[in-house]
Length: 424
Image 1 (tube, rainbow, N blue to C red):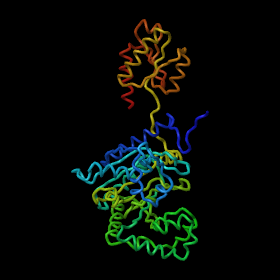
Image 2 (image 1 turned 90 degrees about the vertical axis):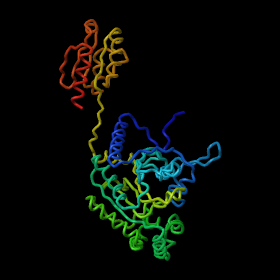
Image 3 (image 1 turned 60 degrees about the vertical axis):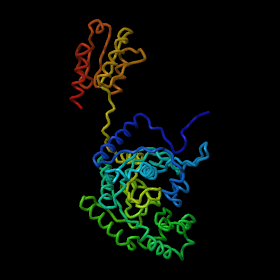
Image 4 (image 1 turned 30 degrees about the vertical axis):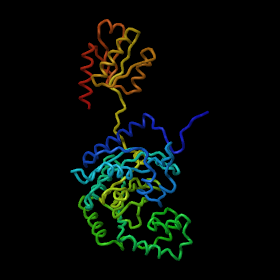
């Protein structure tokens, strides 16, 4: 039997892992600058958490979740997104009582959705997200948006467009829903079956439809911005003023509602121009009722989520130069059994001193060993043969200049440490 990857998954090979590690390092540095702390939650939760938190009428809950019964006949689901689990942890660990508020957290980890695989979108994907829980002021909305924009900027990506909207709150949204239903009432039968169902259960989601017929029928639909209550309207105005003060350009898109039911007030997306049919690379917004819905205090929150695979695809599409060091410091060439025995101890000593060192394990002669050193882009080659062994020295060769010198073992180590440190 031939075993292959399950559809919608991928192996991340060593040469690709270096890119992931670079991005993860940039995430940690960014979150440190904005004072967000990492939280790690389980990869599966009780299914009801996502039904309640994400929303019964969302595509995620209706179609895309990996749900199973465990041996105790409990319904569990592989996490399809990061916010619900993080909020569950916030509630369960009583973080609302922490002295430092709002609580600012981030996560990086695998998520799972059963959907059609496409470029940059797998059934198992890795999501980076941040959440700020405990503040209703629009300044924290602006901070979260600024953080997302800065992430793409620091990676060197170009052509980003920020779109923002307010999706209102339980006070003002019902009036907009009534107007939206009235607008589509006479043409309801023209809607695709899926969107007819949405119109009955969650009308606002119709505006999020990707079906061309629905998009055409909703072109002149009432705007949520015309129905905002005073609180939501003022909040949205403040957000725009803060973004302007931070010199972050934005475009107001009244049709954007996002795909999850927990959003209130602020919703936003970051789109990269020229990045295929689906240019959205980041989405987020406010969820003022979610914490209470999951069993906590009535505290507001806001966050965003983005897929690392989409980030890597964007970097490759724009041919961004990624500063990854793929070389090693030294390759030890040992010739003969006695030299090999001494070489094993030298390699161990040099590694413990902080150098990245490799050696030959196939008992080859000098030429193929030097080829290995070249493939590994070694800065130095240390050659140890019978003559060198008698004199307790190595021939240390600098690969980029060809300069070589005979040095005692300890001197060779000191020379490499000094030159590598100088270049770093």
